[in-house]
Length: 386
Image (cartoon, rainbow, N blue to C red; front, side, top):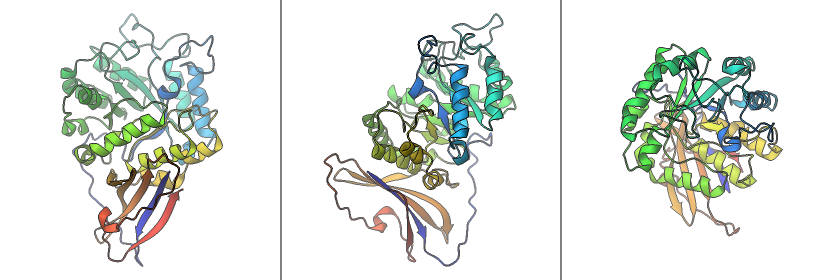
């Protein structure tokens, strides 16, 4: 069970220090804090049979319904703003002019009409594609059509593009992902650019060039897809802990490491495990992209997803990704520097995360100095979640 709390500087008057923002990242002005929203993949995958699964298939109806629930159930009010369609929205072939086209039976009004509906709800619209001949599910990829497809996304008023890496040559990614990013920028429409570039290289033993990646992408996947299970969450957390000295320095306003979607409210996590994912994703400055059925999320899980104090930690404007500072007896301590900064000293968010499964409470004693917290005036303690 996780415990997330905030350690604020104990002082009589706050002196806020404005920090300079790095300018070596993609400067489309977007994602100054980790993006928040909803994505279809983990919960709805590639269900295209709308006859047998009319309420769950990848379709215009599903995404309008999810947009409605993002607003009516309060998710938009706490910051979840992007509604993102993942794979399987396309026809199997481009149209006669070589342009991408949605499946006509499942998206009878076209993508722009759906985009307009999502925007009418005060939300932003995201769409999936793949830097390859095909998407992962076998639909047309952008390879050979980079400029044309970027223009199409702009015409459809897309706000967020996720570009996967199936059916692509690894050696081409260092050229292809930046090229597509440039074409997106050249349209003049601001679009968050989510890349799967480093994960494919990591799994193939190629060391990703994160300096180049942050100059191209607003966020990027480093590790495999999350599954609806606690084991999957733990494997992702451990990957980020083991690689933190390599990747944390590249996270910041406009460019984020992405450990994949929140699966809170699905089938695989208990309430306490859901608290853990939310707390850890907050401490890691991760994008908060839900993938669940917003029609059926139970109140306890909805409360976790909408915890404003935890979201505020995630959205801290300094944009510093947290690290695991201690690991002992299957208990981890994660620490993230946050605002306010006073006299050169950070405040901190801290997660004490137990991986134990024996059900017995364990005492843990931690010195603040071991966590890098050395303000002589001390800190105020504020619990964020139990």
